[in-house]
Length: 109
Image (cartoon, rainbow, N blue to C red):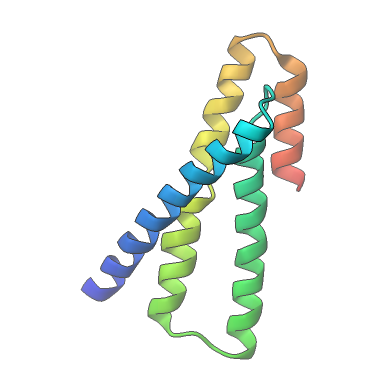
């Protein structure tokens, strides 16, 4: 149990740092009202989760490696709280079009 907690924590540490770096990098090149950086990490993370589970079904992965990647790394890399906060900021600023667009893109992609 302790090993699982440690690998999830380490994966979360790496995922959170990579999320922050990725969001800042994408938003630097695409500085729009909606955060394309958050959209990028959520879509990429969802794609990686799909690949991971497809691979795990065919080849098998150790439970520790699955916990590290899915719960730790990808759980921290993808982010619902940042998405929610950005939507709140868009609503508060009266930017309703970008608010709707942000929700549609993040939920349906």
